[in-house]
Image 1 (cartoon, rainbow, N blue to C red):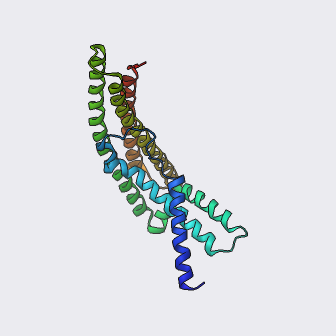
Image 2 (cartoon, rainbow, N blue to C red):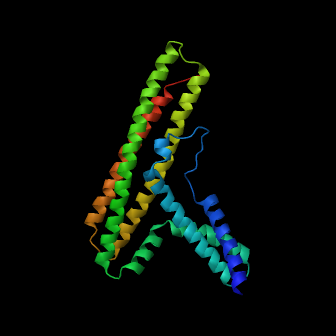
Length: 237
């Protein structure tokens, strides 16, 4: 295979890998017609949890696709498809993270320190996300109470109320999807800690950071549920 052919093939594979990643791995697209509050949609912390998983997925899928293209499987197309899907699971899982850490750190103590630093980074991002979410939730709760008053006094048309409720629903949906991304990552950290314990490492500090993440997730989930319950009290008929 000459250099020109290899370059063209690589470009095609890169495009295919990106399409596979976009189609099968990204989970944060909006499912509501109204956009989420810009404070959420433009939040670097919310993007952190979704983007990190997406990039790992895309990278893992592309590696698998390249292996099929450069190798000699009996059915190259089937191999590329399977590799792309498998790459998503490996790219975002605890096993992938552990293998990567072990290749970077020969010393177990250094590896554990680096892992603790990574979880702390996640906790910092989660705290920033929670602060932003609480501001949006507080505003939405005030909007809901105002909508109730305006409906009761006939100051608000049904279509206007529907639009305002749609905005609140968009925020709630966005927060639920983002929280699901955070919870998924938290579960992977639990698997990482378990693997380190099984290898003989003392994971007290790592466990404490993971527990801190779990507490933050539970608190944010409770506040989102409260907003949803308050919004559900409005019946427009």
